[in-house]
Image (cartoon, chains in turn blue, brown):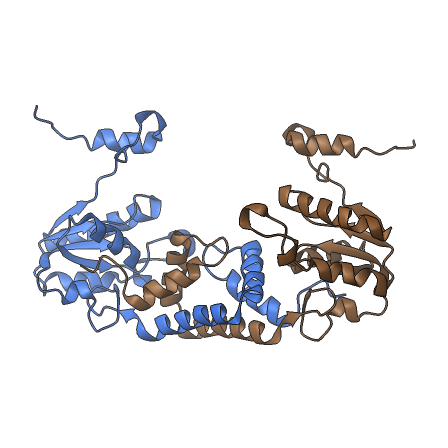
Length: 202
Length: 202
């Protein structure tokens, strides 16, 4: 007897185990951590979850996280509406914004196509993307999905769907990371780096 | 501008990042997952956290998680009070109970000695352990801390402290896992397995 946890602990472990990247062992570890730390610290976490869920919604234009109807980027009139960068998740926007290289607007798909997990275009903000093109006068769509299988499939799908629109469609470059080392690059990345080679003028 | 997340999202990421084994990237991933899933599912997680924290306390005798004054094991009169198994965490009790091999009681230290993290005997339920020995008539203490550096240090410390009590003190065996393979065993484990060899009668 007593080979399992008392019910509230088991429920907590089960709920934590549903989070992405949290396996049964991590869920256990997090649960016992929560039981051990001061109640105030736990309350802070619970409040953060509730507040974020209550206050944060998705931008009605680009599906970035937002506190208002529009996210700060869509609300910024200085951003160029003619260039649209398509990303999988809001966190990708943060990464791109940090480069300071992009002055256009974004479109967040809220996921990526994955036949294995049964995620097709209908599960993503795909028709919302196509609906934006004409009203906003988009002239270039930059496909910034991740350079992995799902990201490539999604990018190819969008590229094909965009053909009738006659809009310039580009894909971020794959290649060696800056500061990287030829010797340690995997052959796929190196192949992409060769394929995407550019002319250099001395 | 807008290179960081809107404040409720950032707060959520920060709070999630304090959980054990959750780095900044996982925290981000979990936060966006929570923002995307239905509010009901999030509420279930929040409730599970609050309920566990409110209902669960530590057994006043062995520091296992409990809903009553005593945990189910301590409350079970059929358990042998003369054998005491010392573990680091409640989750270790669940692992040992699953073997069905142990019929005694437990003592949870609620951690392990770790000079690097500034955790000494005072931060653990160590004096509570020594205080139990005489009143409960303990005749054997089995040191079941993990077979890693911190666990060994803790076991050695307890063994030394127990000497004046004249109580039999044992340590769980280290060795090759059942179903394991000599070839793939690390040399420390293999060394321990040799050291702990037993006579076999044919």
